[in-house]
Image (cartoon, rainbow, N blue to C red; front, top):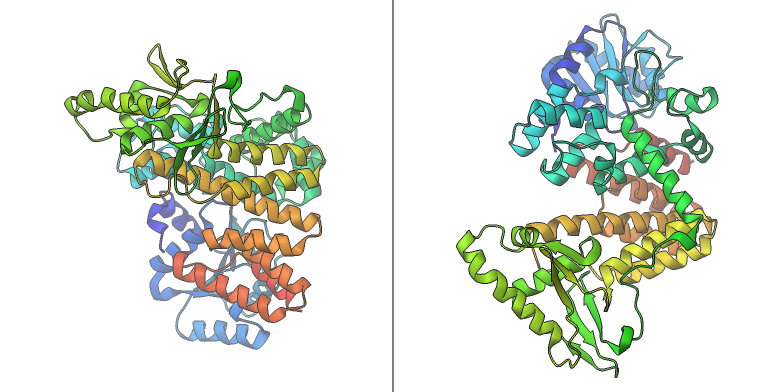
Length: 532
């Protein structure tokens, strides 16, 4: 799928590429800076004067030379490499004729190229405040105020992928005065930073990265980011991207909390045999096909009467909100998003009354399960609320805390419990806007869980379990390239090169059909290594 029209800095960058006169031109940018889409746009703009090349298909020197000679005969001046293989790029550079240029992308500067190489540097790949406003308009149809665009630019340094993920996930809502911590509250942004930025560093480099003082570069640690150009130019000294700094600080704080488990608050949704004071326990299933039940002190389970759809939606909204509470306006906006004021006034209180009756039906205790105080509706914390979605989140975080403490088997146990809790998408069968928003958040958390569990199984030398986890990821999101690569490695460990090739071919087909791109260069390099 062509997404080059979503590059607000496209024209500026294309002019820069065309102005570079060296035989080799590198588009050098951070992960998620829009390099691949920019090369596609360059091919389209140059027309017959440019030709795209898949380096993975050019396996030997004669093939490379033939391509260069044919391009020269057809008047092609720009050869655009779709994929990064330094060895093949160097081989192709040997056969370039005067006036021909080889354009390619990469996250590391090519210092020892065989010919003169110019780079479109990472700093030029960042969006300006005006380009941030343009991206906002392209994605939402709305034009932000200059102040809002500048705030978002300062929070992100103009980093393209986090900006796009944040705007797509929120529709621009809440971004008019955001900061880096606000962007990190958006799950796709965290997912990108964790898996596509930080995970790209080796384990030793990752440790150095976390030790970088943010007010000044540290020589040994700084080299880990310097080689990738993953820094921002400053008036006095260069610095790390603001968003990366905030993410690393958040990870440090999470590990510090994990080292003090006694300070962690007890979750409100932990299951117990019965509620305090002999009260019933409410059990809500929000992952997969929803259900709502009450378990009385004598062990009897009762299905709650949630036939009124909006009454159940109010219950589900409260049960999946922080603190199990929400304001009246918030509930109206979520459950009655398009109705007029008269319709809402006519239905709001009857709906809440129906929910109260459903929660209290057949009970002798006068303690209300649903509270209303100072404009806030809240599920009464004096009851026990077994909510699978909250328990799922708790088990995921508990697994990460255990892993931070060095308890890998305990982490696996927590994550396996979370996996069992995930019966399907959040509120399956419901398609309201607020449901879709929370469904996406839980889905991303679920995929993160499976990926991290698969990685952990490998460390615990459980390849069969790792394969199950990785395959479950690909069932949900078949475009996760890193997971395809993990599966290929497992097949290679089994000596099944035929399955390695089959998995790689499937990945190539999916990426081409769905996104119009090839696998990342490092994936292709690893594939060829596994096939040796």
